[in-house]
Image 1 (cartoon, rainbow, N blue to C red):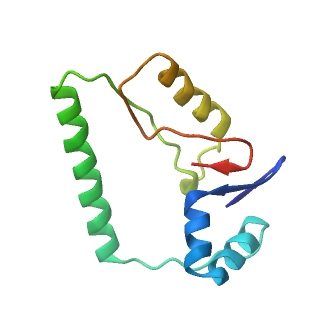
Image 2: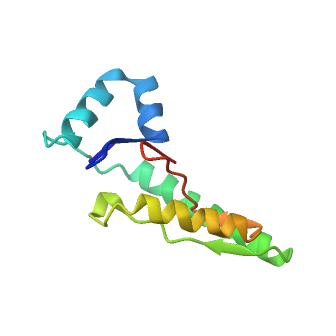
Length: 117
């Protein structure tokens, strides 16, 4: 969840968090408006799952390429690390690859001004 000049931007993760726990949404909303951020704790289990997920994605993309499919890997901005939220440009880049007929777009983005995915 982010606040930009046009208003609140909500992602699928925000929706999932709301369905799991409304209080998380309250905390995220507060943080997006300048309030304190919820504490983050190191969790080695989560780190292992993330690493395995990245390895799985890499194997799948390699398999697509081995099949002769055209694969485009977009560099997803890391908003948690302060990279600029260029959602519109990122979504336009995704749409351009779709229009060009690319077979596989890794880390594509859709954005309608409020919903981000």
